[in-house]
Amino acid sequence: MNHYIQTICTIILFTLCGCASAPQAVLPVPEEKQIEWQKMETYAFIHFGLNTFNDKEWGYGDADPSLFNPSRLDCGQWASTLAACGMKGVILTAKHHDGFCLWPSKYTDYSVKNAPWKNGQGDLVRELAEACHEHGLKLGLYLSPWDRHQATYGTPEYVEYYRNQLDELLTNYGDIFEVWFDGANGGDGWYGGANETRSIDRRTYYDFPRLFEIVGQLQPRAVIFSDGGPGCRWVGNERGFAGETNWSFLRAGVVYPGYPNGNELQQGHPDGDQWTTAECDVSIRPGWFYHAGEDNSVKSVEHLTDLYYKSVGRNATLLLNFPVDTSGRINPIDSLRAIQWHQRVRQELSNNLLAGTHPVATNSRGNNFSPDRVIDPDYNTYWATRDDITSATLTFTFKEPQAINRLLIQEYIPLGQRVKSFSIEAKVGDQWKAVNPGEATTTIGYKRILRFDTVKAQAIRINFLEARGPLCINNVEAYHAEIDLN
Ligand code: FUL
Image 1 (cartoon, rainbow, N blue to C red):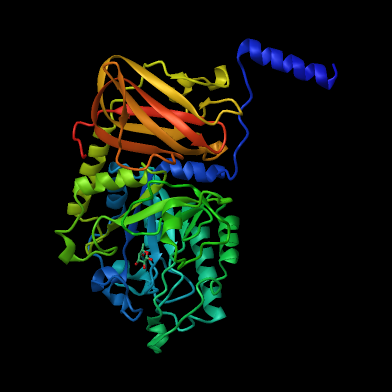
Image 2: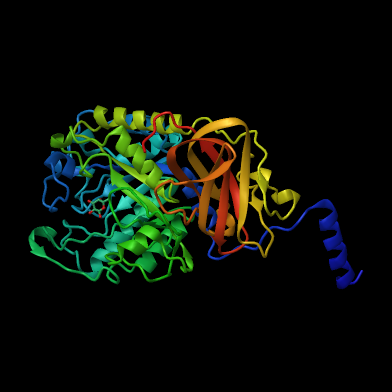
């Protein structure tokens, strides 16, 4: 059969059986590990170290290791608490800016090996790695580039020291899901007793490309966090929210630690060529480290719930920090609050009202990509429109009118992020009425969750108005949250 006849036959076959090929990817697309990472949705940060015992946020680098003496340290308590809060992983400050190492690094004495904790025999990174394994959590590590302890800081020798430590951490503790390169560099510090201000060029000093290469070699599955990625990016604030419009793209090589355009971090860049989803880092308390004086300032369930919608619900991940206290445990105020928050989110999104409906679309590529793919539980099936169709309406009709105040939409991101603009309508009686979630209905990405005043709807429809290619929507859910935040 020649090529021409073969093509005609394929078209006839597809027309008869309704099959069609998958849409082409619209670039940039995520790596498989970035998709798995985003599916984690919520994971924890732990800030713990000498700062905890000095009541400081940024230790100067001169504190005596003998102060590190948690009385009841229990990584099992951290891991079981975090798992109970729905966290899928935890990122530990293996070394913060003060330079104190929570593992017995062979490259410095400024570590747990000179602390009274376990008579200097302890290794906190190992204990956490084991606890994570036991409780089904993934482990991530934060290794501060800025080091206020080391005398060599500012010289090429320090960069080698830093690389060696990265190598130790990524070699000795099993699989690491994320490596966190903090962009902060304050300048002054102890620096081996020099007590001075040292400034470095944050863009070039650490030779980030080389560091990323080391991560790639030692932990190819790890996602790299820095202000500009490449794995995931800082969201531009430490308050835990992403932009209403939020593209998973950055322009490669443009964003660096200290990059002044916070908007670009919060919203991504619509024309970016690098897939770098935003991660929202925020502490459950005002500080990152534990301060007894903040025991009454733990974020409320309402506040945390709002942050969930403004991070996970806006195509980002939520990295929620728990400042482990001086006893070496997650403080009971924090754990109780976080568990209540997790239950609250689960309760709000528990009964999917679209299950069992028969979604109808104004356009579809055919059977494999039919609209009912958006209500099946399979992540890898999706509704898609024909190649030339970038706007369409998807309608869900109920047997009886339903009270609704939450809508969740997911694009099939393995093929790229496409939707630029959409609107929601509810059929009340015989009338279609606009639903106003009080925020821009622009991008969707991996997941968008919208809250709105309860509407008693006979049907609900999503008008996809503008997209970068044919639509690929793999999931839609609707809920009635009993506690209405709006
Ligand atoms: C910042 C640091 O300076 C803070 O101490 C904290 O670690 C936060 C997560 O990142 O840049």
